[in-house]
Length: 437
Image (cartoon, rainbow, N blue to C red; front, side, top):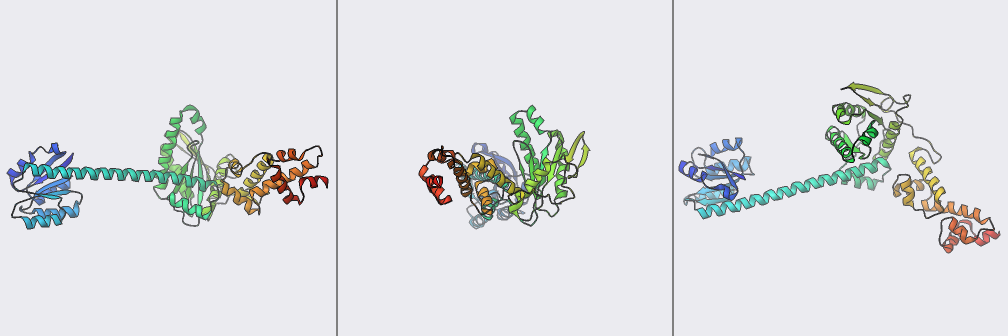
């Protein structure tokens, strides 16, 4: 019910209005006051939704009360009690936002109609506010989903400028500065925990972890976080010049929740990078550091004991020292390793229908990212696949017992004419001429 305050200097009128069956209109009488000053004091201590006030009163009249309410309590609706000779006062009150007015002596039908309309208006406003809150909540939930999706891609692979701009805008992620570092954390006993709890309990744990990190990391403006719902492994992104104190503080703050997780926590700090597009390098080196926590020669370790539990944190050796990326025959770095793995998969599966999507999924990259890796080497996925197939076709055609159509099928094609066209472009000869040469 909406709370109503009655303000009138005449006691008889106050008591008569207070005795009105307001509940039939969805209202509740919160009290009554003799003048405007008393009403303001009452409202300061007791919230109300509607004020029914007389115009002419001592100390503070209805117009002055309206001015104060419109300034300090603009959400309160006011209905004026006015006599036939108070039109000028009533006009001023309406100018200050009075919802309506009633003429004295108050008629039952007029009072019922006026307040019924006001209650309807209040109900509509409440529904609108509720819908707005629900819409805002949905927008917040959508923004969080988009943010998690963007962070997942940001941590997994290189992102082009357009993708970065769109993803950061949709996910409301601010990537400013020239220093970005990712830390990767692991609950060490999570595998044992997963064996002993239900899927629902596991979801509750990751939900709790997500909310804790929201409070101790994102809400404090330290950066962004991402929790893996399956493993409870989580990653923190910092744009601080020296993020190690903040990363270590997370470990200490999680001490309060160690009883919830019943696990030690290990952490790996990644390589600091200067561009948002290279954040995936920091994320990958953080995971590599975490995976190598057993190697104490390259990782600084400290342990803290509390509440009978041990929390282990593994910061990067010597603060923010860069973690060297593994060199490979494809140009070095993690990208080179992934490209090498992709090419190996192509060489092993060229003899069937093989799409860029399948290869990209095999090496856990997006199709656009894998295409970019090939282009960095001056080739394309299709060009590389075709070259592997043509080389194998040349080997098979050297066997006179092998029919041309059999060669076509053995190297992953179903259309002999299309194969012949590609083969001629590659060797300068048709398959039959190549065999006869």
